[in-house]
Image (cartoon, rainbow over all chains, first blue to last red; front, side, top):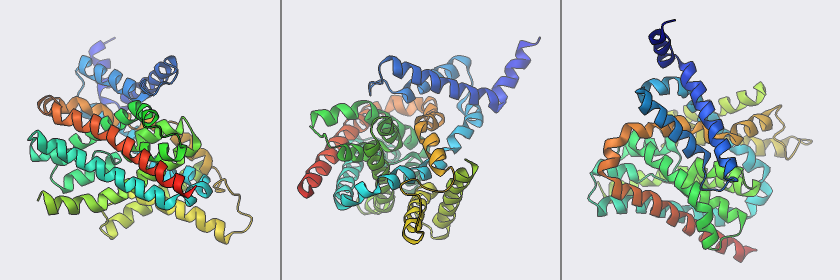
Length: 238
Length: 123
C-alpha cells in the first residue's frame, strides 16, 4: 500500500472534496442543533471553518478543493431559480404589501452600499478594496459581477459578501428583536436585503412567511443594486 | 423530480441567454427566478383547474424544497475561498470588518423598521 499514491489520488479527484464538503455541512448542522439552532450557531460558518482548517492543515490549495466542490457550487443557480416557489406559494400574502416591500428593500439596499463605500473611503482603503465592499449585501454571483464592473476584485467581493451574509444570519435576529421588528414579513425583508441567500437560508428554517419575503427581498435587491450601483459609482467615484 | 429539476435548469438557461442577449447587468439565475415566478402566475390565470397553491408541475415543489432546505450547503465551496484572501484581509481588516458588521446590522435594522412602519400603516 503506497500512502503517497493514495494521497495524490485524494488530492486530485473531485470525490474527496465533494465528500468532505457534504460531511462538513452535516457536522455543521449537528453542531447548530447542539446549540438548539441559536442564530449565532450558524451551520455554514461551522462547515467553512472545518474545511478551511482542513485545507490549511493538509496543505491542499483552494483551487484543487474547488475542482471537486464546484458540483455543489453549481446548484446555487437552480436554487436561486427555486426561490420563485416559496414566493409563489405566499403570493396572496406578498402581493398586498408589494409597494411597502419595494420601498423597504430600496432603503436597505442604499444603506448597505453606502456603508460599504463609506468605511472604505474613511479608512483610505485601496480603491479596488472599496469597490469590492460596495456590492456587499447582494447575492454572491451578482456582487462579483458588480465588483468587476466598478473595478473591484470579484474573489474578494465574494468573501466579503459571504461574511456579510453569515453576520446577518447570526446577529440579524437579535438586532430585529432589539429594534422591536416583530412582523415576520418585515423580518424576512430585512434578512433578504442585508444577508441575501444566507439570511434567506436562515429564514427558511424559521418561518414560511419570512422565507418568502426574504427570497423576494434578495431578488429585488440584486436587481436594484445591479442596475443602480454601477451608475452611481461612475457619477460619484469615477 | 427530474421534471422539476428540468424546469429549474430551463429557467436558469433562459435567464442566462436573456442576460447576455440583452446585455443586462442582472445575472441569469435571478432572471430565471423572475421567469419561473411569472410562468407560475400565468399558468394560474389561463389554466382553470391549476393545482394552486402547489406549483403543479410534477415534482417542482419537491425539488425546490429539497434544494432550499439545504441552501446553506451551496454557499460553502465559495465560502472556503476565504483562505485565499488572507493578505488583503490582514491589511484592510478595519474597514472590512466595520463595513461587514456595522453595515449589515444597520441595514437589517433599517429595512426591518421601514418595512414594519409602512406595512402597519396599510394594515
